[in-house]
Amino acid sequence: MGGLVYHIAQGERMSVIKWRDSYNTGVAQFDQEHHKIIELIDSMYVALRDKLGSEVVEKVCREAITYTEVHFTNEEQAMSSISYPELEEHKVEHLRMKKEVEKFQTLITTNFTEGATGLYHFLRDWLINHILVCDKKYGPYLQEMKES
Figure 1 (tube, helix red, strand yellow):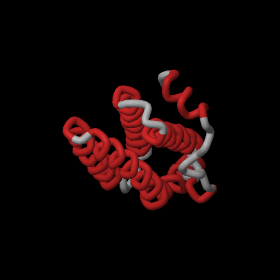
Figure 2 (figure 1 turned 180 degrees about the horizontal axis):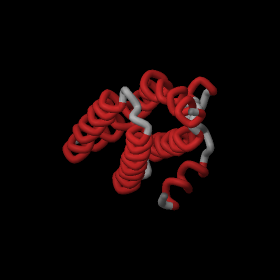
Figure 3 (figure 1 turned 90 degrees about the horizontal axis):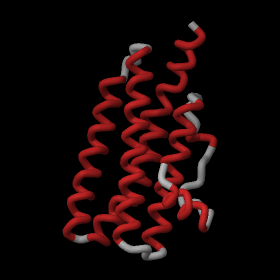
């Protein structure tokens, strides 16, 4: 990840999203990736709050989106490798999120503040709900498959 986001996130280590044990899926790789996504979303918040300018905000948004897509690929590959029964539903959720993000990216080009702020709120809320509703389901299944 780029140094810019790391610098922003470290500049003021006030977390907007507080990690809770209830977010743990039981899969260390994905929990670490979720932590990273939260750091990136926090960086978006700081960039918006501190009015760091459209170039910085857009870079932070791109990094958050890019890393989230990498995470989705990792999750889907892991689920596919063990024939996770809810893989298709999970992919649909990921696709739905990507389509919403595309709408915000389009809005950013016409109304920067509304688009960037909306994207931040959407990612923040979507991530937590997705972890708690969808991702929490695969943890026990993946653990069970490892033990088998």
